[in-house]
Image (cartoon, rainbow, N blue to C red; front, side, top):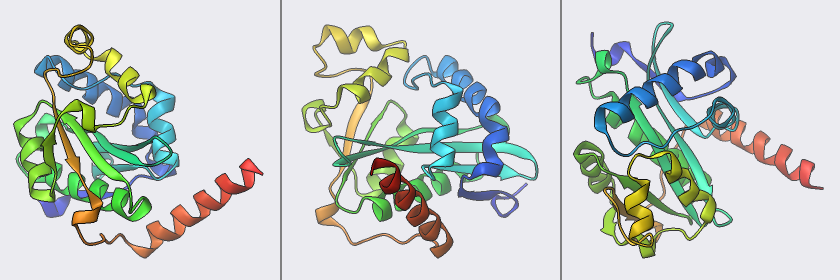
Length: 205
C-alpha cells in the first residue's frame, strides 16, 4: 500500500458512518500512549464533520485516519486536535498529510486566529515545528474554560490540576499568523464553508 492509495479530504456528511470507528481508534491510541488524547462523544465528532471542521483519511470503504478543529475565545484561538492514524496505516505519511490539511483549513477559515496544540507526541511536535509552531507556556494559550474542560478525559488531568494549569505531560505549541503568509484550501471546500457560515448567521437572527 502507498500514500497514493489513501484519500485525504475535509470530512462531510458521507463520513458520518465512520464516527464509531473514529472514537474507537482515538480511545485505543490513548490507552497505548497512556497520555494525551481526551475522550470525545459521538455527537461531538459528528458535529465536527458536519461543520467542515474535520479531515479524514480513507482507503476504499475503510477508515484510516482523522483529525478535527475547534475554535476558542470567539475564534481568537484555534486547535487542530485528535490526530489519529490506525496502526495498519502508519508509516505511509498519512499523519503529515492530515496535519497539513487541518492546518490549512484552520488558516483559511480563521486567518487571524492563533493556532495552538497540546501534545505529548514527538512526531506531532516535529510536524508542528515544521509548520511554524513554537513551544510556549500554558499561560500563552487560550483561557477558555471549555478548552481546558476537554482535558478532563485525559489520564494525566490530575497533574494539570495540581500545577494550577501551569504545565502537564503535554507540551504547548503556538502558531502566530502574523508571522506567516496565508494558506490555501480547495474552492469547493471554501464554497461549503461559506454556506455553513451563512446558515449560522441566519440562525442567529
